[in-house]
Image (cartoon, rainbow, N blue to C red; front, top):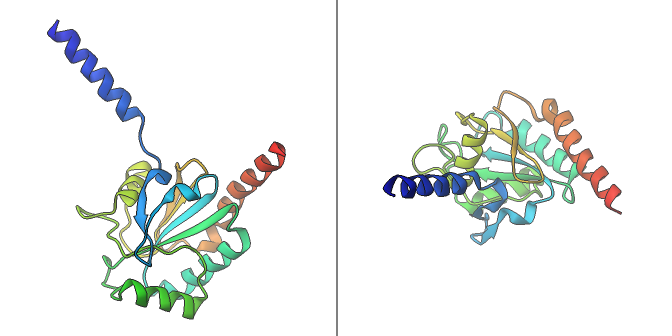
Length: 185
């Protein structure tokens, strides 16, 4: 009797664990301090990036991310920017300062979120999910995680991989979304 209870408990736990969250099930705070559900991005492809204002990669990545967002989004694609100060203390400003810098300097129009930790014990849960899903952990600014329409992580790249290099993979996923929507019409 005890054995079957333990077995039932294990089966229940296993079935709950099988219902793993996807990226879009998380809630995060946007750059203006409002709690938002990432659910609003479900059905679109997302490139999730930990950004920093004072990094050697800032110029190239911000410009390329904004161009990608402009070219492919926001109906089928979004860049989602998460400021992070964990690597080289290169994102020291407040959320207001970060937003002002990104919008003024690079005309950023993609969604930005409140500054977070992306690794370690204080890491944001959405980023924990990204890291655990793909098995790659950011070790610097401008890590890029490609998330499909269902919130599953497709791939991840470090800052040494330019946005232009991953553009074909992102574009292919977005093309699939557009073709699927056309078929549904």
